[in-house]
Length: 260
Image 1 (cartoon, rainbow, N blue to C red):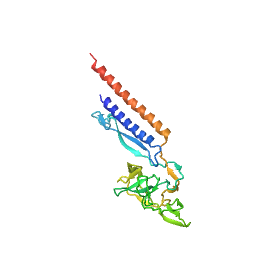
Image 2: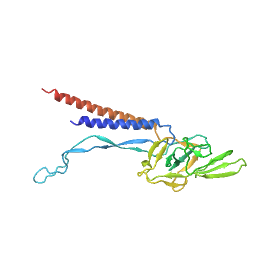
Image 3: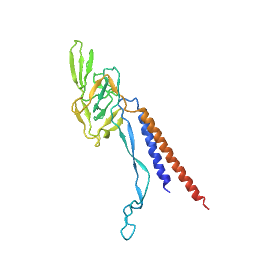
Image 4: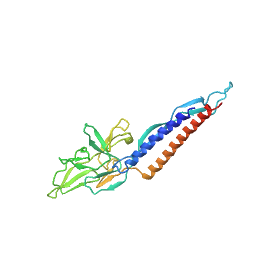
């Protein structure tokens, strides 16, 4: 009887499903977080009677056959890259992306990271950096003693200096990918390019399908609490059903062994 092992794969699958859901719920207030979804596939089948085989010497074909499955496996934990809601912060260096694109971040090992988290600060040199101190690409350096700073929808960064003059500091560029779900998350709201994501396409905000920027706003996680709770209940019930199958298979084993 294979029911014990088959049901065990179902319990393991739903255990991972709950872990994915719990991570989504834990990051409901994480800036720029993109939720994940667990996808499953059925395992190999044992053919007790192959479909399409001959059942007689006259060439009669079996219309359906007999197949017994061996359970379920996790095929992917796909990341859903839909737009999150924007929340106003009234902080000058908070920037949200409305639409396609990622901020480019210079990581300590020399690679480029990609993020939807636009909560930026200034470091000791005036360079625009993430909360971890990593500079954006291309670098934007904000001088001291400025009166006001504005970041337009196309990424242009301007300040008003002490002489009330407008000074252009540069323009923020965005990156996008053919398969953005193929990016790999490394934590700290940062993703890395992979072979699955393809090479980044770099352009200015608001051009050629790229999203625009919104100053004084941050993009929140795209996690919906009601949906996650419903998915959690569904995963819990599926786990319970698989445990019931194990219990039923155990009782059947017990009945067989007690036959006199």
